[in-house]
Length: 63
Image 1 (tube, rainbow, N blue to C red):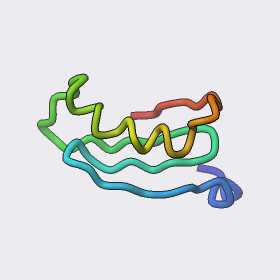
Image 2: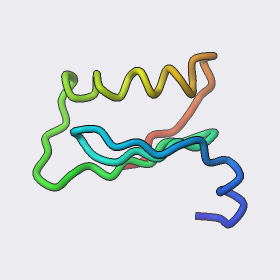
Image 3: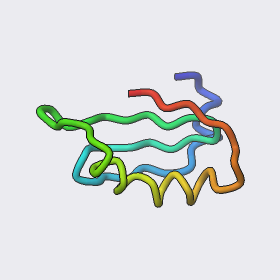
């Protein structure tokens, strides 16, 4: 991670699936060990995605 990326940091959230770090143009996910990613579990993440990228801004998901 570049030093100037800290200026683009939007928030850190923990949900049942793991930790998610939101930045201006990307999300970094730390999925909990043993978790199986499913559409149902990703539904917990959708409100956060819409909060930060609701205007249709493109972003990258890094896991």
